[in-house]
Image (tube, rainbow, N blue to C red):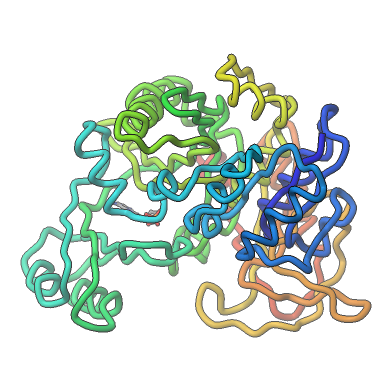
Length: 413
Ligand code: AMP
Ligand code: GLY
């Protein structure tokens, strides 16, 4: 079997590595991929992720059996539809179902209609109304732009001034949709769920991301600064509730409304006093959650994808270990940062997943905000953390930073 992975980040590096281990796959290809993926896949960086016709042509010419789409943008732009129309199998939803990630409002309205637990919200579609609203709303208030923002479009305003500043920041002009949400308190976790129409099978291993840029969850929101799994202090009962109250009903709601979803639904949840509630849905694997989960997954990812396609039962098997991933990001991320700084000291065979590195002659240089995830495996969180930080420290570059507390939540409890 031949499989094509679409995407260029650390999540796709992990997907290509994991699929390369499958006993039923002969060859893995990746478009556009990155330099670090050459050990696990045939990299085709001459084709752009946004070039849907180019990807279709490649898939046909190379008799690709399955295409696995990693990032949200090609999903939201309808790449899966283009491929499916030509009878190519795709793991990833079409444009219509990907709205669950692409539009906060779409997700909120669906959750409201089907009584899926989430923060109360209010939709506002112009700046003056938004300013009026924050002048008297309950604080803190969460302000979300409707549309994709790579985890960076959310403002949590604790004071009236911050809320007004926040509205001004999300409204460069008078028009535009914004969702205000009630601020929820609790611990966040990520649950990846395989979905085919109304058939939903969540991973029986939760992961936890670290969204804020700096230690102790301070600083701005990012795409994710590190992750670990399993999250043992969030117990099986929470997993059961999340499945029963969120995963199953959202799959059924999507199917009922005619938004057939096939692929991976990411449930970003928060464990409040009233139980788990949805913070966000994504239409694809989390990054860096995928890197730690796929490292821990013992069973064959491709076999699971095929079982999902046939709506057969799926039994994920996990290594008896903890996996911690620490993200090294360019200084200044998620704001402005400079590129082209030499990065060395890492191995490509194991211990790292690459997000934002490119070759510059003989050397690697940083080419993105999030650059490389250092992985640690161990029998306890402490052990895995120690290895992950040793791997992080091996990396030499004068322009990277990382958080020092990835996985601490699991130790403090
Ligand atoms: P989102 O892009 O919707 O995932 O939001 C990014 C981050 O903002 C989340 O991971 C949370 O840390 C925080 N956040 C979003 N919505 C809420 C909410 N209603 N209450 C508390 N925190 C939130
Ligand atoms: N790590 C969060 C996300 O992938 O959206």
